[in-house]
Image (cartoon, rainbow, N blue to C red; front, side):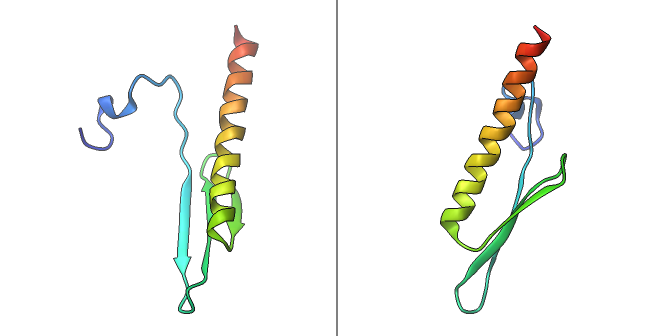
Length: 74
């Protein structure tokens, strides 16, 4: 299976995309941002632990909203 093939989508009825940009500076410092291309929200980080927290928060937000939307349409 290659990226973009129908099987790649599993059996999802909704899909979400997030972009994670990470830079490692010359002194070893990690910086970057998490970008939601749909809402154009950006969350910046300067530590890997913050990156993990931001990804987790983004997933919880998106999944929570999708579940709420689904319940409102039923």
